[in-house]
Image 1 (tube, rainbow, N blue to C red):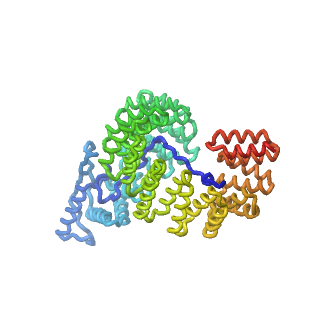
Image 2 (image 1 turned 45 degrees about the vertical axis):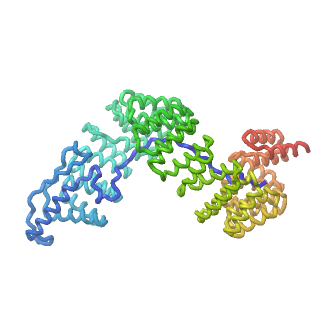
Image 3 (image 1 turned 60 degrees about the vertical axis):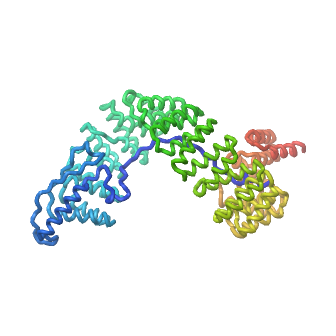
Length: 619
């Protein structure tokens, strides 16, 4: 048989949320149009002052090309406060001459008109010329926004020259140096911030080093451990060191370090890292315990609570997970993803009523939420509300959930034996979405194959009459022909695919395997499967076919080698039956029986193994 096992489908996994840190500030999409970036030094008030000064100079007859323009009156411009900077001391800019003001105003106008080259050039020139901290900072930020990393580092270092005791300048220089791979210099800069007793970012330096080589990470780790001896209670240092230890596969040392230095002052990030380390060491219960303690300490930290909820889901404790998801939904009422996750866990736990209520609420807020509609249909189906499920899925008109929702409708109608309704609905769907007609035909055929293969064949013929050539439909019809005992139809469709698509590995493999299984045209079979193997050398189904061809040709040693590789990668019933047969023919009867037993233990259908054993053991 040439069945669907020739195509190995990937499995989907729900991964727990990993610890994520943002390395650099992300400025708005339009740096000049938006004035909400935290550290933009030339604010609206500065723009207004520049414009007013320029207009005044123009009115009084000053020209840009005047040989010796009279210096403008000293201008002291303070940064306008916003929601994020009101607690900071206002910035005071230096006294600028007329040509500097013109250059800066030109830069701002150029930036607004997308002439970023002019804006950057003017700011860099004026930063070096004036050595004004505000202009230097602005030049650094523009450089970073435009991806001019060398200019950004040059400006950050210039800022530290101008203001050597400014923690913000030192932090910026440290991060720019780390980005450039100068980790020792970056550590030195950040240590100056530590000496000034200001906020450090050793965690960000450690994150940049994660991409470096082991020698660089080890050097930074030694520096951090040295600083920890002088500042044993610094949670930032211990967290950064633990990150590097984790990357060096020294998870137990990382846990011990965090336990020692952050027992009483652990941050949310360090607690999440501890939990992740325990999980990596195969102690999920301890990982959950650490997070439970952390959530009690930081009850409003949504990241930690979400990580805990997901770990609880993975552990099977759905009730505890639901409790935390509900608290997350209360804390974040506008977060649709949290509400969706809550509904899914409720559905998994069997509380369909609660899940339906949550999903209906989501759709009231956002009627276009395809995922909510898809899972609401699943909840109705789980509750036995068939018509409500179908109606909900039919409300999905586009997007990623469209085809999966139609597959659920098709399967439900087939299971309920509502074939006339299925036929009418699919005809309507293909008329409304002609561009998806091949996919819709394939979904319907797939659902019908095991229930009514004759009807499935009718649909395949109908599809190919309407769409003429489609290799997926031809391949599906070939598999149906094989199931219905029509080997000529199988071979005809596969050869047509290969004629149109000479490098279609799936068709090459299927035809070659079919010929070998019939013990016919073995030279051609070998040629076909070898070509498929060249195209997809790691595919275990193709390895199995190639091994089976060699078995038919009498090349038992080569067949055993290939089939062992295939079975190791994909221990299904058919590969196991083949490998066992080759081992049996080589006189390895005990191992053959062991392989058959192993494959049968993992198979839903053992008929092929049973038939092979019966045939060989009877000889």
